[in-house]
Image (cartoon, rainbow, N blue to C red; front, side):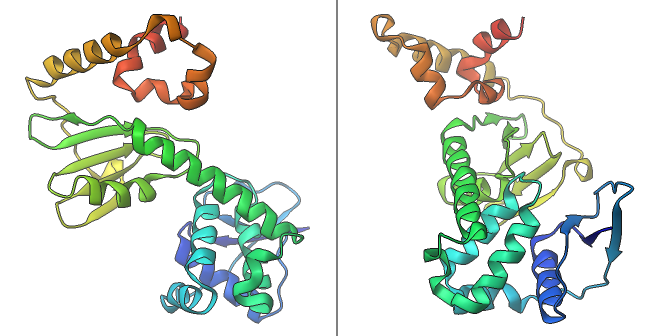
Length: 252
């Protein structure tokens, strides 16, 4: 039987479970969140773990901020074995400490670096692709649907970039929403928020102006569809205002 250990889906609970498993010399077949649907060969093991908030600070202080960031970005990914990868990375950090990321011959290290880079690259692209619209309530609103869970990374970015605005960013794929109140942001299930997305009466005019500007600055003689797809993958077009017409054409 495959021994599948369950955690509640949060990063802190995952780290708390990993420390428990290592402390008790338990080697899991995999670690999965509570939404996992087991197969006939799976043995589901649910341990009532008490979260230890000190774990995150310990990782940052003892192993360094870079290792913590790598673990967090792997957690944000959609890799099927991300929890197990973090488990083995954590296990090797106990041995190699701050030097762990230099041990690229270790599969868990090379895999972690690759996944973290993929998540980081997608988040970096989204920082430029997020398109806010002003609602009637004067709140800025944007929708995204990334491959990886980039909502927290984007929230950190726009907390600095739009610090004097009220804004909302909704991850449609995961049905989560980030709410910023000019001081802090809070990420909650979108179903917990009754949201009126009625646009400001001037928003359509601004949208037309932006699309006109985008089309005007384009140089037809230098048009390169393949190169544009490298910088602006089609999977993001749905929520990019200036690409809405082309997105509709490509879906017909």
